[in-house]
Length: 382
Image 1 (cartoon, rainbow, N blue to C red):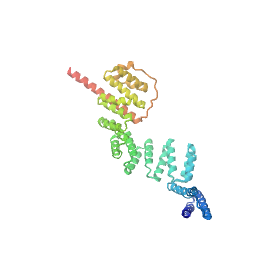
Image 2: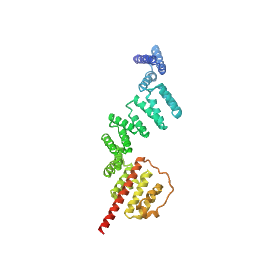
Image 3: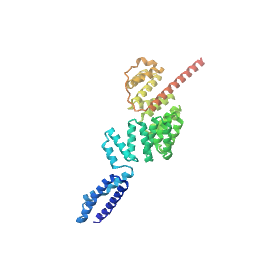
Image 4: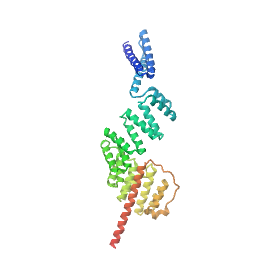
């Protein structure tokens, strides 16, 4: 009977606490808790009257409905989550319009609700209502300043809404508090990169490496940034580090191959392009075949060059335009097939595609300069 007495003290204390909160806050949700607790008190009272030792199942049931459920409720409440909020969200999860309607009701009833404001912000973000998403994420931050993920989501929306200064300031403030938060560093570096503030981006990425020395994206982003600064020696170094961390990210191999082309180290470049043709990304495949074709032309392997050029066109028919505009391929143009344009399956983002194009254009410039220097030297010798 000792456990019944202890149980009685706990449940009565919880009941009194809940009743006081009901009176003070006039929150009808407490009525549900009081009803549950009252059921437990009735069962407890009956057991005391009949002086019967309860079995395990009955004890467990009493603890769940009378102690555990109320405590769970109060924990949720401490996090600004209310039962009726959860019910509103659960009942409308698959119906977007209903979900929006219920979330709006929730935030009206509970202005400091972290959960409903955050879900409403995500709803607006997913439905391209960026300004409203901004407002909701700002409210979430005011309610829970330590939700660092929300800072990144808000910064991303600022960036999409062309409010780059706001995005940069928000991320810098976050990194002042949490310098080890790698996701914020990558996002800040990427925004600076897109603003063509390449040296500032490099500082951000390098600072992040101090805390996340095994993060692939940081090394790859540094490789791309040095590429845009035409510092190909440093770019190569960081692409190589990225490739060591994640050998499955074929974009690093393609970029490395392109840089070795700029250095005119064709045998080394060829190794990386052979890695690229095994990629599942068609954009990487087509570019790898294109460069393999060019290398074979430079080595006077015409048949192989034609095969690789046609493989590139088979995967990405639009690549024919680059072939036609490149004097290196003039000798095999008559042997190259044309294909109907089609959509290429790629996961590369705009920045990665720009980097591929930048390296390609840089190689063409270097190639022309080198050829012109050769011609000048020959003429001088004459």
